[in-house]
Image (cartoon, one colour):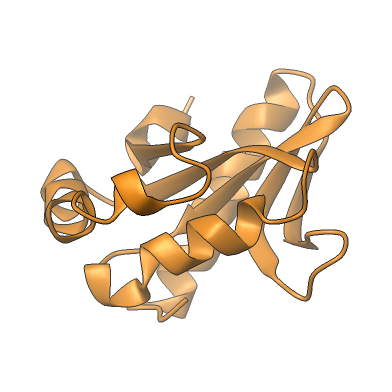
Length: 120
């Protein structure tokens, strides 16, 4: 994805990873989805599948194509969570991609969140 601030992304990724490790889950940074060359910012093991987190700020990050890339190998990733820094960034990101979501192959396996929910 196109990044606004690589340093900010790294911090967000570490916070998400730490959050899930505190809950007792295995979490990995820059995990490459098996069967692809697509790395995700954070992956959290959820049983036999994974929940992955992509950090992005703007709709120019081509979110829809990243969701599809993450979910393309069947049965590997159960959910993709797109994380932004603020609610304002989240709304700015969701608005332009909402019309694309019904056309995704894996509709319903995507979620959107803000980083503050992982700062526990």
